[in-house]
Length: 322
Image (cartoon, rainbow, N blue to C red; front, side, top):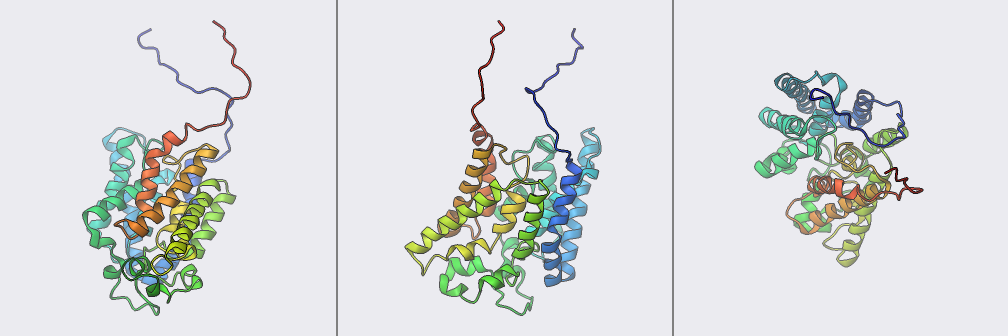
């Protein structure tokens, strides 16, 4: 019949784990609270303004796209709020309103909705927006310039910039404990390492993210930075420094693990995380950008469908009914 609908499906068995998009979104928001609150405490009202503005406009763009494309309203599932929050966590507290407006538009409309909405996006929406800002207005994400007027009570130089331009001697002021507790400048929600680790562990315990991607990502960073450090310890920092600076921890637990843009099979997840970690250090140490996390994850997002073709071998033999 010409009006008959075609039913598409995949082979059984199926098992629902009881979770939902709404539950996962709100769990991610809850997990990010320690890092975000620390950033707001450190940078004050401007940081709160950026976070609030980013979440609000991400939800507004989602609503407008739902209406324009005739889709069911989806802002209640929390995904747009998560995208806005992730974007805000990556930018400086002094980010101008027009940049937040532009970034959330790119994240929701370009990074998510034009691909078909939630579950269809090939790339992490928040990282698409950050990449566009980095390529279009590099000064916006220059943390040394953006936060120059802050008196934070500690050595206020962006660690990855100091390392890139002046070598290891310039970052000896930072102890691992300082970095872990957020006594470094950076994105609003990306500097408080302890909070990000707590949030990541919470998401793993709740089953919202798997351990394979975060752990393999951190292992890739650790091993690659160790090799560089052993080759030239005066120029390249050791693995502990790289694990606790830049976007490493937010990348491991909140960005690389985004459902739609990451693999689902065991071996594929390990390769995805490891390769993203390796690429992050390669960009940091010998590439143009200070922090390679954004572009490393985006490039592995593109490779994710190919990696997912690596899957367990089927058990048993099929039956030919022809």
